[in-house]
Each structure stands twice: as structure tokens, then as C-alpha cells.
Length: 78
Image (cartoon, rainbow, N blue to C red; front, side, top):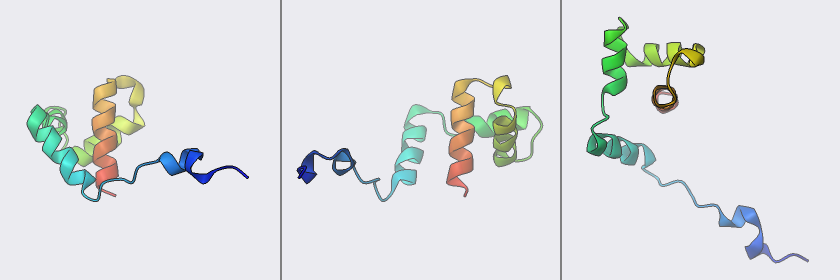
């Protein structure tokens, strides 16, 4: 029988309990906090979440960085 400690699923690490707070703190440190909101206001959207949904529906019109920011915003607001 195969040893359980060598199974790939046993090597997965648990997600930190406060992963969203950690991600928010990292955005503040990098100075990227609010960049999606600024882009949304520049594009004429009232909220960053509405703009994030727009980005996800028209992915080819946006950069990879903006798509990642939109994905994060949508996922964090579920």
C-alpha cells in the first residue's frame, strides 16, 4: 500500500484564515489600493464592482493586471 505522506494532496497547505486582510495589506504596501476604483471612475462607472463585472465580460479589451484585479474584486465580494 502507498505511504500516505507521499500523496500529493497531503502536501497542500491550508489557506490562511485571514487571507483577504493579508491581500488588502499587501495592496496598501504596494500602493495599488484603489487602482481599480480609479479606473472605474475614469471609465464612468459608479462602482468598482460594476466595472469589474464589465472587465470580466470583455476580457480581451483589458490587460492581464486589470483582469486579475477585477477577478479579485468579484471573488472578494461573493
